[in-house]
Length: 426
Image (cartoon, rainbow, N blue to C red; front, side, top):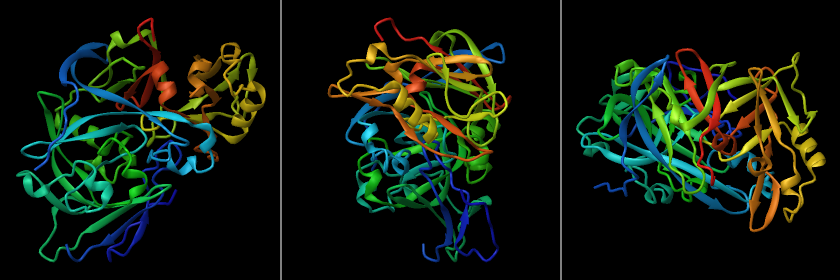
């Protein structure tokens, strides 16, 4: 990852990119000066206010329903978050899912479907200034159609409008198989129906490459990583909702359903009806990502890989990736010991895989870590090697998040885990 830089002469300078935790979907961000310078969406299920829990008290929060859409193919290369690492892991991942919900921006509101992504820090939306095919295939934000919209020149001056000379930053985010460029905009952003709104900054794309954006179902990405991952404090959308008082408690939670189940993200607390038992809380080990220490990993009765009480691994909880990830040596150990049959004939006899977090075992079964597609089976992990102190790093993506309800507490800097309450047939 590049280190942050800045300069008064506004030359093209590398800055820290919001690396998605599924493998580094955003690699480099460049800020360069630019001297020049009727939406309709099919609604998802209704959104509403609901009660939940935060800091031991009953609270009211915002439920945003999430739609799950399965993707089929040889490698999930259409997933912006996974694209970088899938280049060498295509044979492992034959099928995946996307979870996305609705957000509105502007006055009057313009609706967009977005992935609520704990592995990145900014809201990214296509704008109507983008004529790329990838943008044209999705809903585009029209700044001219919003009475509350404001064009922002620089990320470090988040409320200063573009001047008469039209000088402004252009941000370029490079993905594994493509890139997007955009400008900064400030506007009203709303969650839920009736809408709960606040003013915040986001990136409006002016150019997107066909790959991977043209093939995804959602319009944009709403980053929910900690504020360190955003372009600036006012770009951290959830942070802005809390600071404005629109959301009282700086906690949100995620429930990913299986086929036929409702999925949701709850802003302002967590919902006890969505999990069984009690929450296991783990402190965030490296603010930025929702990253916790992983004490160990067991396959059946055997410890795997480099994690131990003296040498901790890390696990990043990432709602923006449909995959699981682990260090290469761990993936190779699992392949060697599991010997997963291509025809799935030994699926039911495979052992559980146990992640040990905050002293508690969080097991997943072969139905979670094995990929099944058209009658064939393969290991559902991709290899990813991150050196200390950020690693060795594991990624808890969608398969883990369907198994466990997760709670993200910004005030206490911790992540909560509990077994998700799925109906018996799931």
